[in-house]
Length: 346
Image (tube, rainbow, N blue to C red):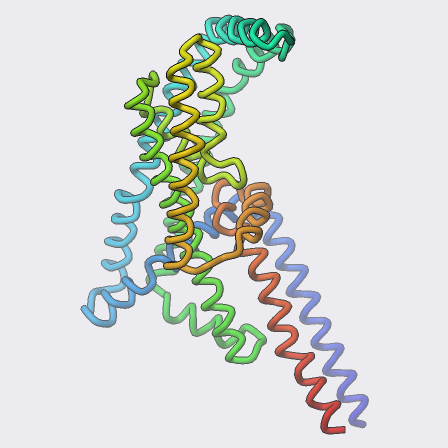
């Protein structure tokens, strides 16, 4: 009789799990476009939650008012500067696209000069000509990305509002319904918060610091369009492995190709010396303050995250790997430890 009851409970449990997985997969496939908005809302919620609880529980603000104030602050402090920088980049990209013939001719001359210097043709002129076709198709893609970004930001704030207003109830519900021991639920929550805070603050902060240091070098050396290169360097600094070198490395080569040897030497020394040292120094300091995440977790996490989620993958890629490792620990705590205790008792 007991075996029949156990089998019946097990079948019901499997049936419910199958339904949950099926509905979850269907919803995920249909709402995949908004996944980045949802992840962004989670990121902003984790960053804002303590301030939200302070305003509503200590200062007795209305939940809706506190949520609106925090969202407006995040928009003006974080998103508006990013939007202005993005507009600068978009303007320059538009200019490059409309003057693609001039750019292609300049690239041909530079490639020819470098080839004469090293005695080897580094790139075929036909390859450079094909770049013009690519540039002609690039601007419509940029417009499409811009429209999608605006849609995702609006969706993110829509989700974030309800997260902030119902923060306590949401966290209590998650605490109740996650099928783990209380200690492991708390561990999962604290680990998630540490990783999100570390990546959401550390990665942009370090990238901005590198961009500012590089900008100082651009202004001193006399690089044309220094503010544009500042934006490009700050964005590239968030990429794993190569980072800001993706900008100041080719720039150094370009200066040499243009015959500006002094500027090229100065750019190489400033970029690979000063900017690189600043990256390592501040990364150590910030990670020590916010949460020390292994560099391999960050590197592979960013690579995976960008493929899956786009730009927000910079934050949630490392989170995925860290949660995978944490899941192994939780599984060991939930089941393997119990099994070992039972075996010892026997």
